[in-house]
Length: 136
Image 1: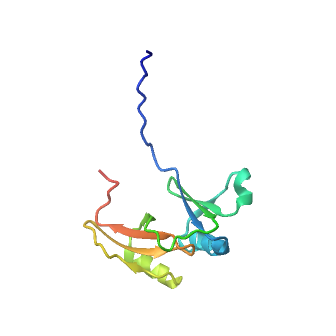
Image 2: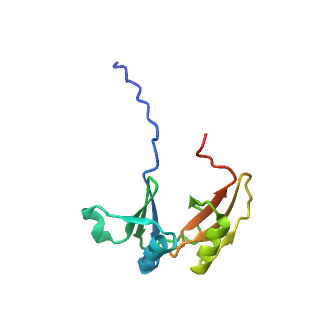
Image 3: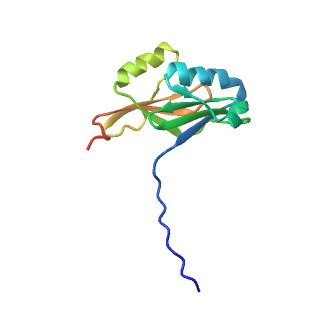
């Protein structure tokens, strides 16, 4: 019997995250991610442009916004977490855009946070870390 060579597989990074909404919320979603959150839109591959939605960039991670029929995000706990430098300032920015702040029901040591829902119902965590976890 041939000996099978062991192949080590590991994750390198997160490439992209996809969030969805019902088709009727597409314009509100694009406004929310580009204007309210201020993400930079990037060009989608030509083959995918007809599908609608948009792709955005935050650091090295892409966020793909697309539509999906019969989506029910309102009850899901899955979420993206965006880190901010000032939770209070960002909360005021969101409030100015009519975005409702959902209080943190389970406080965690080391950072403050709250949640919001985008126009498609996707849950988003906004967090301010007590100490920068990216520095060693």
